[in-house]
Amino acid sequence: MIEESPWTVTISRQLGAGGAVVGQKLAARLGYLYLDREILRLAAEQIGTSEANLQRWDERLSSFWERLIDSLAVGPPEIAYAPIPGPPVRDAGLFAVESRIIEEIAQRRNVVSIGRGAFWTLREHPRLVRIFLHAPPAGRVGAVRGAFKLASDEEARAMIDRVDKEREKFIQGMTGRMMSDARNYDLSINTGCVGLETAVELAFEAVKAAQGGQKA
Image (tube, rainbow, N blue to C red; front, side, top):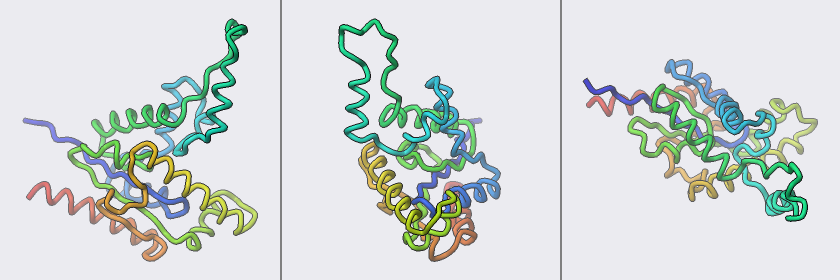
C-alpha cells in the first residue's frame, strides 16, 4: 500500500490581518501541527546562532547599507588573522534554511505553515491549500497596536506600512512573485470584512473541499 502524503496549509498574511489567530485555530480544528515561530527556532539551531539574532531578518531583505557593512566587517587582508565573524545568515541564505525546514516537516506531518514564502516553496506538494489573509490598513491598526504595545495609532500605521512593504519585497526577491497577488493562492480572505472567526470557517471549508476533491 502506497503511503499518502500529508496535507499542508500555507497562510500568507499582512501584518495585523490575523495570521497567527486564524492559523492556530485552523490547525487546532484540523488536528494539524501549527508551524510559525518553530521555523525560526529550528533555523537558528541549524545555523548555530540564537533565535534573537535571526528575528530581525525573518521575512525581510537586508538593505544596501546593511550588505555594505557586512562586506566591510570582513576586514582588509593585513588583519586576516583576526577572528572576525562573517556576515549574518539572512536574505536568500535564511530563506533557503527555513524553506528546507518547512519542506522536511511537510513531508512527514499535516501542517498549517505561516508565512516565509511557503506557498511557493511547497508549490509542488501534492496536498497543498494556499491561503492569503489581508485587510485594509485602517482595520489592522487596533490589532497591531495591541499586539506590539504601541503608544499610538500613528505608530501602528507606520509599522503596518513598513512590514507590509518588507514582506512584499522579501517575497518578490525570493520567489519572483508578489505576495498580494491572489493568483498565488487557492483562497484569499479579507479578514477586515468577514472577521477572524468566519475566516477560520472559510479556511476550514476550503481544506475539506480540497480533500474531498482528491477523493472524488
